[in-house]
Amino acid sequence: LSALAQSAGLTGILAKRQTSILGITAAVLYPLCNLQSLAALAPVSIVGVVGMMMTSLFMVLRAIPGGPYCAASGGSFL
Image (cartoon, rainbow, N blue to C red):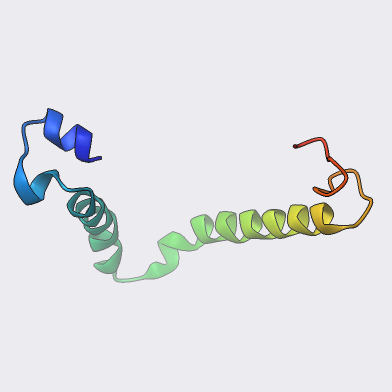
């Protein structure tokens, strides 16, 4: 991000990586903090929960000793 800021002509603190991350975070979170009801975020929340469940499932499958995805046995993803 800092290289992108520098190529846009920004210098000093505005060209730092931390400033870019803080600005992007504020731009995303500020509108969400101003919502009267969080009900609009429910569908996205469900997608996030399903994603976490799938991640957990694949981590368990990879941890099974001798399984097809086991990291120690040279699984297919290594």
